[in-house]
Image 1 (cartoon, rainbow, N blue to C red):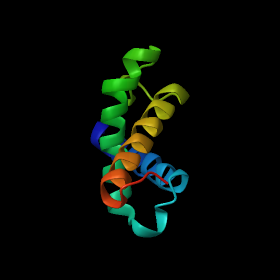
Image 2 (image 1 turned 90 degrees about the vertical axis):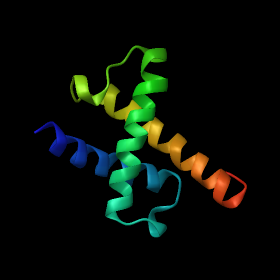
Image 3 (image 1 turned 180 degrees about the vertical axis):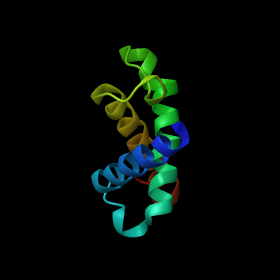
Length: 88
């Protein structure tokens, strides 16, 4: 059941991050899920200890979704930086 929640929340977080970074037209649903899951991992690894909010693994809350969203936005910013040489 945890894997299914990862896919659903990862897809939503990846989609929201792609809307914020204006890369939604370039990505499909599979890439949105991958960005969401990897972004949630990065957010849990980097941002979560700084703000003291749990990750999606410890329970879905507004704080954990925001941490995952920030991680996905940072991931897309890094990808844009390497792809285009600038962050949009």
